[in-house]
Length: 250
Image (cartoon, rainbow, N blue to C red; front, side, top):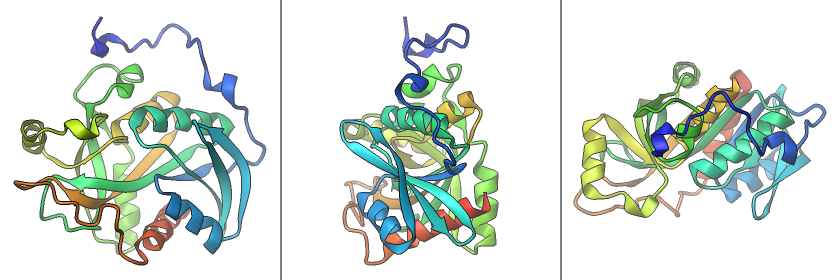
């Protein structure tokens, strides 16, 4: 049985997210999700925040309600990788999340995308396993919310690029030939979660949004780390504030 034949929309799940978590009263309907501990800590330092729950993912991951301007927005740090991120997303949906915004760094497959540039993924190439359990087999997951994300960023006067992304679950197997194939397919970025979380959200009937920011670059003879792991001073706060402002407008 091939991976691409695993989508089963008929029979019932054996282990359900409702077995692990329960709805939380007054859980924020709009939630932002970061991959950065630095950003999570900043959020609870810069804004009034209340811990309202947690996930268990090998470690305890707190969930916060953050008061930002006129809105109460949820926030949590997820785990790297599509499978883990989609699993925690499932639990957040059970708790009460209805609109979820993921934001984090990505690798650039186009060297003209400068370090730190904001990108809105429009389609995700499914080079991972999780999405095949949520949607019928195919090469791409369409990011149905990309238009709305782009409209918000435009209204905020944030320069951004929109384009296809390559979602892979094998960070150390991004080979030169595969990267070239994905570039020919039109991918401008590579990351580990987009296809998975978009597929899970579409299956569960909730709105999932995402913006990325370019960190390292794979478009060249050698890998260029650029700002990966060494974000400029103030950059974490800039992306946090942008995520909160986008979430406020969803």
